[in-house]
Every structure is written in C-alpha cells, then in structure tokens.
Length: 307
Image 1 (cartoon, rainbow, N blue to C red):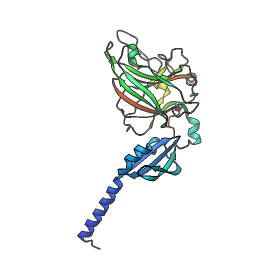
Image 2: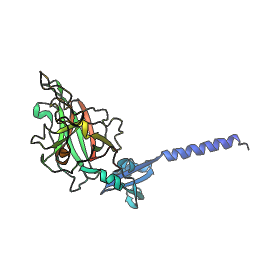
Image 3: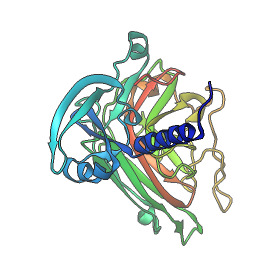
Image 4: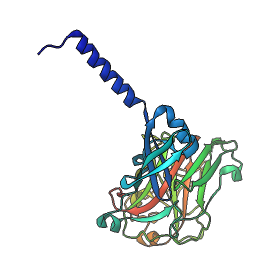
C-alpha cells in the first residue's frame, strides 16, 4: 500500500499538533492535611490555578505522595470546576516499619515534632546568617542562608539550627545501623552539610556526635533519602574550626579523631543511640549559599525506608 505525499504531510501535521497539545499541559499539585492533590490543566490556565487555588507546578509523586486516595472537584475562578486527583504517602510494610523509626518530623506529630532555633557564627565575630522555618502545609523544614568567612580567622564560619531543648527525649535508635535524612536542596554542590546528635553529655553544643552528608545531584524538587552509618560516620571529637573530625586546630592546636572501627572512644554506642537529647543541622567549614528542605530524620537499617 502506498501513501500519497499529501497524506503523509497531513499525518505529520496531525502528529505535530497532538504533540503540541500534550506539551501545552501543565501538572500542578498542593499538599495539605497529609494529602496531596494533583491536576493537569492547559498551560494557559495554570497561572489561575496557582494564583487562586495555591497550586504549584510539579507532581504529588515528587513529594512522596504515591498512594491513590480518590479524587474531588474544586471550583477555581476563571476555570470553574476542576477535578483533583488525591494521593497519600504509602504505608510502610511490616518489615520496613519494624526496621525504621522516626526521630524528628515536621508534620506536627506529637512524638516527633520539636522546636528549633538558629545559632550562627556571629556569636564568634563571624558574618554567617541563616533562617530555619517550618512549612506547616508541606510538612517540612527549610534551612536557608550563607556561610561567610570569619574575618578574625580568615576561614569559613558556620550556621546551626538545633532543637531548642538540649535535654529532650527522642526515639530509641538502638539496634539501628543508619541515620536516615529525607531532604531536598537547591544547592546540591554545597559541601558543608552536617548533622549532630547529642547523647549522654552536659555539653551538647560541642560534644555531640557529628557527621557529614551531601545531596549531590538532587534536583531541588524531589525529596530523597540520605543514609549515614552511625559507625564509623559519627564522631564526638570534631573541630570547632571546621566541624570535621580529621583536622588539626590552628596554631598548634588539637588533632581531632574520627571513628574508624567502632571501638574508639569517639564512636557512637548503642547506649548513645537510646539517649539522643538534641538534634542539630549544620552548614560548616565551607563558605557559600545553601538551601535545604528536610522532611524527616529517622533511624533504620542499611536500606532506605519505603516512606
């Protein structure tokens, strides 16, 4: 069978128009009260949905809401009624649930919600600045700021956001091998992200266990899990100048020690994992802008939680 030139041209034009129509659609979402609503609209109407309904461009799946929860209709000025597909976060299976425990969340849950406050290097004469806020609708924290060079030290300072009560009681993480952070960032190349866990100390500010982590490659839209082994990643012997355990303080100062095998005195023990009393986020030892959004922190095994 042969096709005429005009038929081929008509087919190509039809295909192109279909592709153009598909490309003209925009998917929008909104998270509220533990659910995510999603709608796909003609792009020319998307701005109205964003303005009047508070929707954002993106998908519920990108926020971790993948379990279908039905649909509902809502009325939007200019557009009229639109159908919104609803999603919830998937439930953990029994195996994963037994292996993972939340330590801190930002969704208002009674047992895992804590107040945080900022403590930056201006207390040491530095110029760094940051804010730590909670998006209550989205259920995540936003740590944003700039680590600057401390003039007197000629080295990068720090920004720190930590739980307000230094002697709070957190979930028991004994028996777990990894700390898990679910986060996203618009500054994936920033190299100074750290997290601290204080336990069994009267000096949580400087004798907490601290570890580095990164979100290299994150697209800034998708929350992803970052796993940090409790051993050997965490050490409670770190430099106040760099935040790291493998550096020596200036002017002939102390050489700090990292955990290597789990037997060193600086390593986290099972008792420490039961006694967490403060959690802190740090940006330290590297100058630059940073922006990170954290959904939750927990403890589990070597595999990322299905949450």
